[in-house]
Amino acid sequence: MHQNENYLIDDHCYWVKTGNFEGSLNDLLDSPKNLWGTGFSSYQGTNDRIFEEMCSNYNESLYFIRPKSLKIIVRIEGKEFSNTKRKVRAKFEYNGITYIFPVTDPVVERKYLSKENSCFTLPIEKIYLCVSVGLPYKGYCYKFLASIIEII
Picture (tube, helix red, strand yellow):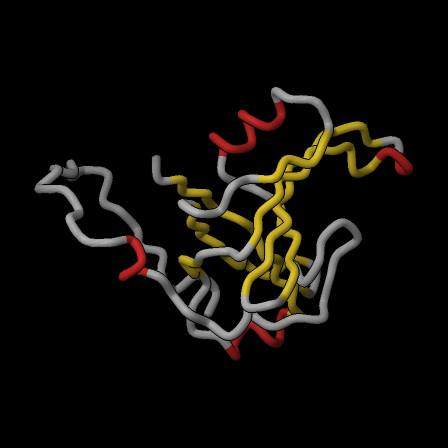
């Protein structure tokens, strides 16, 4: 697996917009039973990692999904270890399973880090999530929320 959807882009070429997507985002949704397995959680997350050896059981490292619920959590996570850095995580439900993933979408991070530490409930009627699982790190592959797409 290990992010086989990634492509190396030739930086000597320029992209040209050729049109607009005219379909429904619902037609693009993935429908995995779960997000790369369950039962393995980090200190601050829920179902947010898998053992490195298990990564080869999956062919995809990206999923485009619709959650059943979504909360953005902003808090200091390492206070007990003298680390005062604030983090943004997403708590969401997908197929009856609760997940808490770190948020890596820079726009979402900026937006919520500018607010007080709290838990923000988002209306999910027009919310889509792009979730991913990263490269191995210290025996695990960690899952994260790569992007929140809100249709206005």
